[in-house]
Image 1 (cartoon, rainbow, N blue to C red):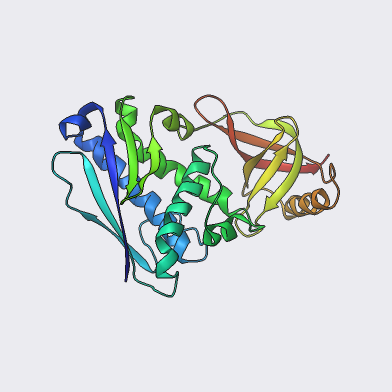
Image 2: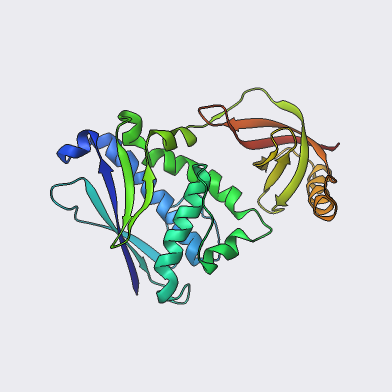
Length: 269
C-alpha cells in the first residue's frame, strides 16, 4: 500500500500556546476530513465527485498523534487500491489535485502540473465547477479558527517539501458565501462547458468579461437545457455566437464578487 503523510498546522493566536478552542478545532478537523476525502476519492476514481465526503473508495485517511510543543495534526492518506494510481506518481498527483481544486474554490491562480491532474482539467465536462461547489462548505469549516481569530494562519505541509496550502483571513472571505434573494434577469453570455448529467457548467458573462460557474435549477425545462448545449456548440464554432440570456440568483463572496449562477430560466439572446 502507498502511504502519504502530511501535517495540518495552526499558527499564531491560541495555537502558539499549543491549544485551540475545542469547538473551533473540531469544526476545522471535520472540514479538513470532508475536503480531503472528496479530493482523494476523485483522485482514485477517475474524477468521480462524492459530495458527502465521508468515504474514499480505494483509500483511507488516518490521524496520527500530534507533535509535542505545537498545534500540528499529522495525517496519513493510505491508498489501498494500488490499481487506481501508480505509487511513483501518487504523492505528486495528490498534492497537485489539492492545490488545483482548493485554489479554484478560493479563487487563487493555480494550474495543474502533473499529467494525471491535467487530464481532469482538460475534460469538456466541468469537473472543476462541481468540485468547487462541493468543497466550499468543508473549506469554510476548515477555516473556523481563523473566523474566531483573524490572526490565525492554517497550513498543510508536505514532508521534506514545505507548504502545499496556506490560509488566512483573506482566503476565509472567498468561502464566506451568500445567495442573493432577488433573481438577476437577462444575463447575457454563452456556455463554455456543460455536463448534461450533473447540470453544472461554465458561462462566459459578457458584462463581467469572464467565465462563471453555473448550476441549473430543477424547474428548468428540457427545451431550455438543450439551449445550453446549442450555445456551447456555436460558441466553439464561431467567436461571439451562441449567445443566451439567463435568469439566475447569484452566489456571492463576502466582498460581493459573483461566484456562481443558480439558473432558473434560459432563452436565446
